[in-house]
Image 1 (cartoon, helix red, strand yellow):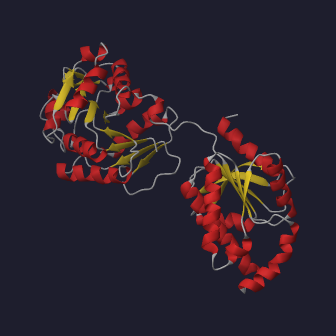
Image 2 (spheres, helix red, strand yellow; image 1 turned 135 degrees about the vertical axis):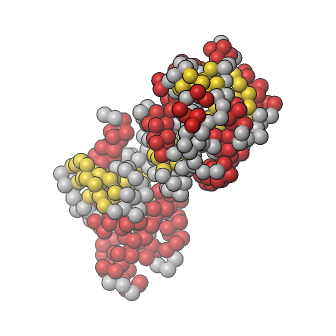
Image 3 (cartoon, rainbow, N blue to C red; image 1 turned 90 degrees about the vertical axis):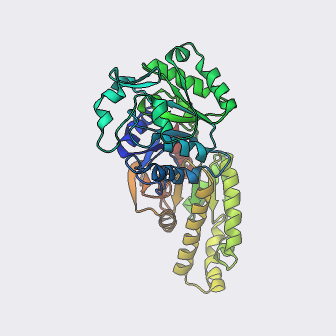
Length: 423
C-alpha cells in the first residue's frame, strides 16, 4: 500500500480516487473502514461517511480508519480528502489525521480550478465568488459561515493555521516556507491555487520536504501528485509453483525448469507432512519458499522427486492409518495451508498449480469462490484468476498432473513474465 485516502463521503472518495486510478494506480474504494483491501492495491480510499455527523464522531471515525495503518514505522502517505467548499468537519478530521499519523504539518490545497473552485488570498472562491456568497453557505446539512479557509478550519481545531499566498507559490517559496513552519510547531498551511499549474507547484514543494506532510485537498491536488508518490514501482514478481502431482510428466516439467535455471525448488517430505509433527515441516517449507521468493526467484514446491515415490504410498498409508483417498485429501489440504501462509508473507506474480486435488485445495485455502478462465497457456492448460480470493486477480495457471510437454512449466513461467512486461 503506497497511499491511503480518507474521504468523508462516497462520491468524494470516487472523484479523488479516479485522479490516481487514471494514471495507472490500482485504486480501491472501501465503503467501510473494516473492509479488507486486496494485496496489490496501490491506493486505498476509505469512506468514513462523516460529513454530516458531529465533529467528535468525525474525529473518532478518522482515527479508527487510520489506526490499522499507523502502528508501524512505515506509515503510508496519507491524503485527507475534503470537500472543495469545506462542508463537513474539516478541522476535526484534519486534526485527527495529523495526530493519528504523527504529522506535525498538514498542507491544505482544496482548489479544483477545472471545476471553478479556487483559493486566493486564503479565501475559498466558487467561480470567482467568495464561498459565503454562494449556495453552499446555506447547505441544509453543513452550512458555511466564512469564506476564509483558516477560519473554517479553526472552528474545530486548536492547531495554528498559516496562509501561503499565490505570489509565494508561484515564485517557488513554498518549499522553504513549509520547512520553516514544520520546524516551529504543529501547524496547518493553507495554500492559494487558481490554476492547475499552481497545484503542480504545491505538489512539487511537498515532495521536497524531509518528512512528507499530511496532504489535504480534493480532486485537484490528487491529480497534481507525481505518480511515484502513490504507485508501487513496477516489478516482475516471482511465480509460486505448487507441484503436488506425482505424475511422470510433472516431474519432467519441474526437472527441465530446474535444469534451465528458471526456478528454484523446495522439496516437501510427504511423510513428515502427513505425520503428527506436520507443523514443523510446514514451517520449514514456508520459510524456505519465502526466502527464495524474496529474492524474486520463481519457486517450486515439490512433493515427488523420483518415480519410486509412487511405490511408497501404500507404506505411508499404513503408517498413518489412512486410505489412499484420505491421505491424498490430507496432503492436499496441508499444501493449501502452506500456500496460504506463503502468500501471507511473500509477494508473488502468479500461481501455477498442477494436480486437480492440489488446485482445489489451494483455491479453498485462499477462500476462492470460483475460477475465471481468461486465456490458454498451452493446449488444455488455462490461465485465469480465482474469484473473490485472497490473491485478488493474480494470474493462476492450472494443469492436470499428466498434461503437457517437458517445456510446459517453463512456458507457463514465460507466459506470466510476458504479462508483467506488457508484451
